[in-house]
Length: 196
Ligand SMILES: Cc1cc2nc3c(=O)[nH]c(=O)nc-3n(C[C@H](O)[C@H](O)[C@H](O)COP(=O)(O)O)c2cc1C
Image (cartoon, rainbow, N blue to C red; front, side):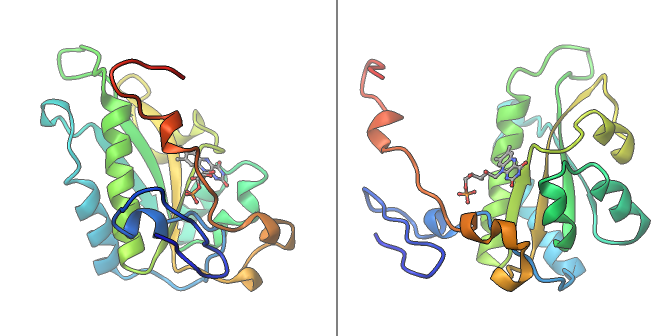
């Protein structure tokens, strides 16, 4: 499969559902607000992700505008602050790393990653763009979201919104804002024994 547009020229090695290559993380957003229905659909998709023992260890805390959004934006590092505040919604993602008995949940981050990907693919199908961000103040995120440091781990933030154009982006970022490539599949999948 070959995807062909100005920003996304990804080619696949095998047949795959187009949604996997159509999704990419642009930094360009318009200022259009998301409806309550759109926001509900994103978290609906996320919460159907699979998880070990169906524990569903993910927690999403989000802000769209106003003082909440100002507090969320203040977590961004310098580079992310150049583009992410324009997105319609910012989500803080946490994984519950201990259960009610105080036992470690070994797969918490893995399960939470599955929920993020579900949200990202749903967003793409709705014509929205997402971009995850590790470049935030991971420690301050607990206080901003009101989440316990003892029970949860901050994973990342996510920007969500209506995709913009090069005109919506800081000029310094335009050149790198395109759908990037991947390693060859032979570098990540091995039959029988790892030979990497
Ligand atoms: C956990 C995580 C953290 C990331 N952190 C940042 C970040 O701080 N700033 C940024 O611009 N992009 C960030 N990204 C976006 C990645 O660079 C991007 O997903 C990767 O290059 C693959 O590109 P694609 O999502 O367009 O396919 C992050 C992605 C993930 C999944």
